[in-house]
Amino acid sequence: MSEAPHNAAVEAAVAGELRLLDPEVRRSPELVGALLHPDFHEFGASGRHWDRAAIIDMLATETETETEPVAAPVSAARAWRMRGVQLSPDVVHLTFDTERNGRRVHRSSLWRRSREAAGESWLLYFHQGTPFTV
Image 1 (spheres, rainbow, N blue to C red):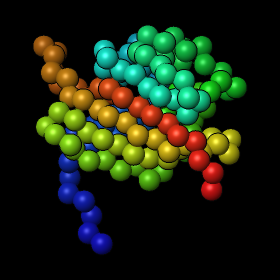
Image 2: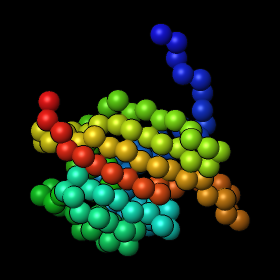
Image 3: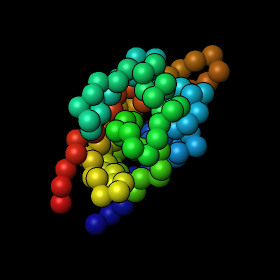
Image 4: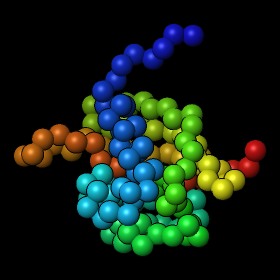
């Protein structure tokens, strides 16, 4: 099987997603906020709907026992099968799985390109987590 061609947009989205798995990033409202689109929303593995402000607030005070929003709980989660496809010049779709403390979740994220005066960045626009068992 041949390796997929290099795609800078997909790589940028993957890098952003991996940052959101980092417990230090998750605890920082500034770092999380820099990765989330102004219109961000999520349907979490818990079934709860999160908007940008709610997820930033929750992650800043997240503990090991809380439900996992935006890709993983406070401790590092194991992520695998991360795949991405660029749907348009400004949209990337990622799918992957995470596991933490035996809880497995299928994940799907949409990342949108943002062009600001300060430059270009990829921001998480939508995320959904669905629990599964082996």
